Picture 1 (cartoon, rainbow, N blue to C red):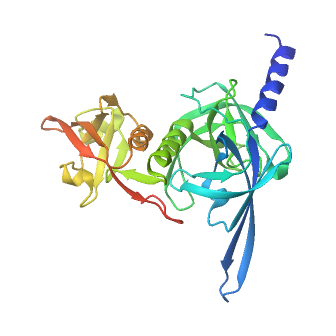
Picture 2 (cartoon, rainbow, N blue to C red):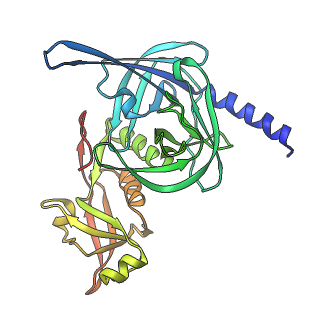
Length: 313
C-alpha cells in the first residue's frame, strides 16, 4: 500500500470511529467553606459499546449532578452514570443516543499504530501515534497504582474517556491521562480491564470490586536473587491483610503466585484482569511457590460495592 492509499484508509477509519464517539458535559455542585454552592463544569469524551451505553473515564463524570452527551451529528441527550470503577478510572453512562458500538480489542502490541479519537466541545479531535508500552503502572494523584498502555499519540484536552483505537477500528483502551511535561506521552486503560469492568457490571448490575487481600510485586531475576525467592517470575506476596480471603487460605509474605487457574501471571495487571473477569464470590486456584514446597491453593474471591471517592488501598 502506497502513502496516498494509507492516508485514505486512515481518513475512512477516523470517519467510522468518530460516529461512535460523543462529547460528555458534566456539572458538579459542591459546597465551599462558607457552605455556599459552587458549580464546576467538566468536559470529556466517551464512546458507545452497545445501544444507549457509553464508556468514559470516571474522572470525567465523578460526583456529577448533571450529565449531557452530544454526538458528532449534534444529537444530544441527558446521561446517567450506571456504574463506575474509580480504581481503573472507568465509568458507564446510559443515554438516549443510539450510535454504532465499538468493539474492544483482544490484545495490544508494542509498535502497532494507534489513534486517540475524541470529541471535545463536539469537535473532532484525532491524533496518530504508536503503542510505546504495555503493562505500565502509573501512580494517581492519590498515590494509587493505575495499570495502563502507553502511546505517543498526543492526548488533547477533552479527549479523556475517548477510545484509543487500532487500524481495525477496535478500541485498545480508554484514554485516561497524560503527562504534559513528559513530551506528550499519553495513557489508556487497556481493553482487558475495560472488558472485565463491563462484564462485572453485567453480572452484578453494578461494579463489585474483586480482591484477594494481598499486596503483590512483580518478580524479576534480580529480585529473586536478592531475596532468595523460589522463582524468578510471578507475583511476590509482600503483604497479606488480616481477615482477607488470602489470609483465610494461609497465603503469607514471601509466597510467589505463579499461576491462576492454570494461567501464568507475570505482572499485577494480569492477576487483576482474571479477578475482574471472574468476579467476587467465584473460586480460583492459585499455584504458589514457597521455599519449603509448591502449593495449590483454592481461594474464593472477595468483593465489595464501591462508592464515590473510594480508591484502591
